Image (cartoon, rainbow, N blue to C red; front, side, top):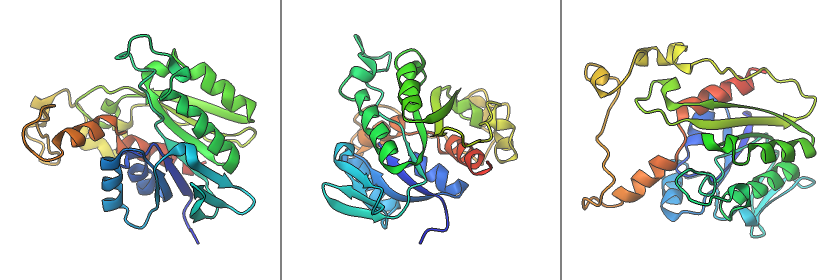
Length: 253
């Protein structure tokens, strides 16, 4: 029995979505992540939450309220929200001749959409800001065709006081006709929880602020076990503080 709204976390990475959403009041009932190292991180931090490996083998049977992976039951009950950052490799500016949602990796959006149809849940999705011109119209069309309304914002990491820009597109979607309080596009750093990070422009501004740790991250093989894996996971992860505020906005409907 779940007292909090339930979340199915897809393309989970190291759990940035669930970390933020659980702080807002949600409860994660299952993860889905294909990378082994990221699954180990999830298992360490959420030992009681089942983890599926391949979104293509994940199914939700609405009549029995059973979430299945390769035919094995992971969870039984309602799913209120599906979240995740579907792959950006075919959307990113770093890839030449990017095929967008027609690409093998970013095309996994269709699996997220399928699970949305199967569960009837709401959706909180994330991708690079370039999705705006490389697939957002398709995403919005797909959602409209299944009877969902949607709204989206491009929110940078700086909105919560980070020292890097890291613009990402966040999309919230729900069954048409269910009124929702609009997600705020105002800088999140104005919220009291982030007031200590106001006016941060770079490393120099952080020297006297003991509340934040600023490690020097170098993308190189320096002999530290799994250092490259850790950096890759951090690079792929969402900013939990942004997700927390979006989660609170969703729950305040």
